Image 1 (cartoon, rainbow, N blue to C red):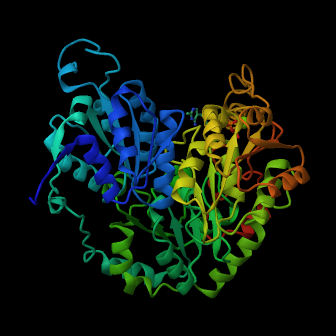
Image 2 (image 1 turned 120 degrees about the horizontal axis):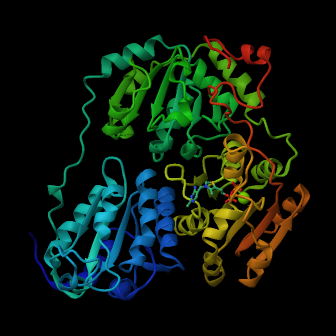
Image 3 (image 1 turned 30 degrees about the horizontal axis):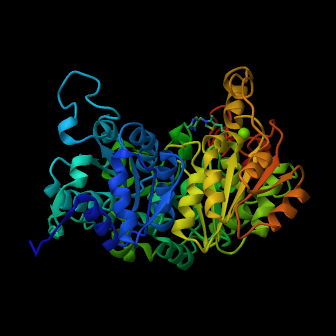
Length: 579
Ligand SMILES: Cc1ncc(C[n+]2csc(CCOP(=O)(O)OP(=O)(O)O)c2C)c(N)n1
Ligand SMILES: [Mg+2]
């Protein structure tokens, strides 16, 4: 213990966050976090980002963490404020994002505690109990002197191992109380250590036999762009990605084959299927990527899975002979350099990859239907440094299939929880994570209506975010699902659903807006963006489907629209069957 002095708990929190380099706290005020917010304002080195809904604060913090890789902070009052942040906590949980949630709470003495009543006072909910299943650590501070330790512990847990959200619940009397501002002894927190000596020989043996290697990137690959680019480039290894990892590897490189899986590109899925080695880096390899029939997935491949989360490795086995490596990618790259340096794709594999990329990487580039033509034209007109956020629905799938990310372009969306309403708050978070990037928010009419109040935030802050609202006036992704599984009955996705004129809505908020009915409208409107909030509403037919995609539970190499038997055969070097 070092020297100490007294300060209030909320001043302590603000000072501590500032000393950790936190520059922004997202939040919404109420009686029970007013003290914390006052301390943040008075601190002077942290900007309080005052949004219009607690879910925005939580989602913005998620995307801030996603883009910056740093810890993000969100705060709400107790009760409904706290429950409004729960979805954001679950999003951060599923997308492995280090976010510190700070909720206000009723005073310790006013809490219901063990009594069999619903609440002792207003706005009292057991947020710790509710948050426990979707946070790495959730604690209510019962004694102000435990705050320094608990805060250091929570932040350590959020960032260490597989990152994720943590919650500190702050009863109001604790917020006002004095704490000893003693530097807690942070060495008490373990730093995970990964012992890879046991797998080195197996790894060496597997990679030495491979002629058709492939890297599959998952969400956990973020932060290792340099190492991954170096490995793939030095060894000439092709790369495919999960939805959340489409911005990790430079998509302009000829060995990149794009997003894989049920809504992936044919080239990525052919590469996965035909590979003899799949190096899955920070990727959970759920069925979305392997297809439903595991025996049809990559029949000749040895799979090497590197995951920081041992539970992921234990809970899921893709193939009985796969090599599971429990390690951070940092440890993996450092300790397995020798084995990685002998990976050598054959000339035939190299040529095959380039043929696939040429044939199928931009399969929809010549599709003149609106969403696709808009996406491809965006690729051509985008700035070299930008961040695209995407909501959830068909437009998200069009985006991940069509948009390409160069080394200075980033993508923030939610693939784990798939939370509608994410994209606009995420654009706000992205702006504070990197204000110098061009920020573009791709969102559906359904998703925009879930966060539409934040148009006022953009207007108030004059925030240079361009919203591209892909308005098909239906909850498209669900309507498509109803076509397949519910006899085309569009209950609640089209029936009893409607969307407003978003350009008019934007104008009411004082935001410039344009409408695009055809590609040239979009191009003209897109050229006018920059320096201010801006909304482009793109009118899309409700019937535009997502292609290519899986239908009828077929394997991932057999996407719809189906290729002819001959064309499929041309792309397959391994055994396969057709349904
Ligand atoms: C919070 C939330 N509620 C419901 C869903 C289920 N859902 C997934 S996609 C979707 C439709 C999205 O519609 P829209 O935003 O218009 O996008 P589109 O699919 O039309 O492009 C719905 C309702 C969800 N993912 N998240
Ligand atoms: Mg829609």
